[in-house]
Image (cartoon, rainbow over all chains, first blue to last red; front, side):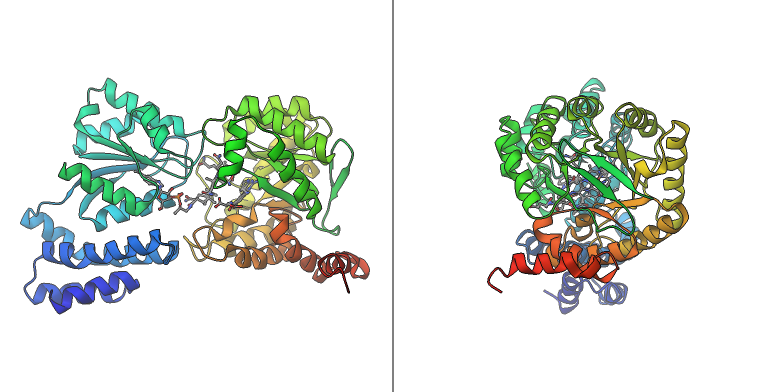
Length: 212
Length: 282
Ligand code: B1M
Ligand SMILES: Nc1nc2c(c(=O)[nH]1)N[C@@H](CNc1ccc(C(=O)N[C@@H](CCC(=O)O)C(=O)O)cc1)CN2
């Protein structure tokens, strides 16, 4: 692997936001494509960060800083990726469900997905079932990822699944859910496809969904 | 301004010059498998045990939150509140966003409990304040509204003012509102705690009300939370919080020392009692 790519990976792992644009430009000048930088620099970096977080060796602020670093590089790469028509891993619509304002976990999930090469459409927080349905119509994602942190808002996840069914879109997408009170049983109960306990697991699941 | 909560056996006074009142946070199933399972099984014995342990550790009010999957709050909350009120004799802090569970728990609680919580959202004000009035309760007022949590201390003050004004319209005095300026995790925003501390000072100065705070929120996502929480609790008390919602087993020392250093512990009596309890042979 090229030296620049290793440097980019390390910058992501160590959360050196300031270094990201320079390193990205260097890599482009050295003739690497935007897709290479994403696949072989940013993504392996985020993989390491995700694994360390799962092991309890990295903590939330460090993950956020790594994600910020990746973002700084992606800002430069995105237009190039679009221009080249590079094929992303897939597309995910993410959002925190209706009545729920907790978005830190959802943001981490979105960042990990981007770090795995997904195009992420973030609907924000307090997202009603109809909004998920509209977004699925408009964006045609492979996956819908919902987050809820309150026992009182979890049921809104079920409502979204139902709304997607009623709109005839249920089979067009995979649905995964997560958040502190959510369980695998609950996912099965509401007819979602899967539950992810944390952000790295959500990214792994998403990869499985699109490769299946 | 003094706030009074009344339990089945004990009255608790909260005021700026009085020792800090600990609201024990541990009856809350988030992140606690054993409690979640006990609640699902309807086993109130573990709830009782958690309540009594916290009393031993220095809690004077017990927060009761039973929100987890597989628990119908409307059924379980009144049972848990009854158990805690009965076993401890202390005032209970009824912590539930569930519309039906809250009145059901208030009906059996008796005394003058603390409702956790109302906020500046129109729907919340309309739903919770009439319950405060009907049951002669006090209430924690969260400084957030339909637009979320204000990023600034001034914004949080405005929500606190709104809650106090709306309560006054129903004949609920400001001494029955305990404002919570909202502790958010510094793990996600490095200025989060600073904003909260500034808001606490501002609300204390402008409204003179008593102040609650879910202080343990401050450390989510960080290692060694106990240390971070301990320093934050002391800073929050110095800024004006007088009834933090915390784990008394872990936070008691910070509370006692903060009281000692802010003129709330005459002749160091509480500090010395705490010292002797921790060093029985000396
Ligand atoms: C596939 O899709 C996926 C996959 C994985 C997914 C996923 C989606 N979403 C998450 N994951 C997973 O991946 C993430 C990273 O690995 C993880 O995400 P998490 O979100 O779990 O983790 C984050 C990285 C860090 N964690 C967090 O960000 C949440 C931390 C705690 C302390 C928390 C916070 C910060 C807040 N809160 Co609130 N808050 C609490 C939380 C306590 C807790 N134990 O969780 C909780 C969730 N809050 C609670 C409550 C009650 C409330 N909160 C409220 C408000 C807030 C703040 C706004 C102050 C703030 C949120 C700020 C924000 N911008 O998000 C109020 C409600 C507002 C509303 N309508 O939503 C309020 C009602 C007020 C109150 N009394 O505290 C409790 C819920 C109780 C319950 N049983 O429902 C609570 C558990 C605290 C407690 N112990 O009582 C995984 O869950
Ligand atoms: N008015 C008001 N009420 C509140 C909060 C608030 O802000 N304001 N926030 C909460 C305060 N109580 C807690 C209880 C537990 C934790 C906590 O952090 N628990 C660990 C588990 C601890 C354990 O295992 O013992 C966890 O990971 O979730 C944090 C705040 C709930 N009630």
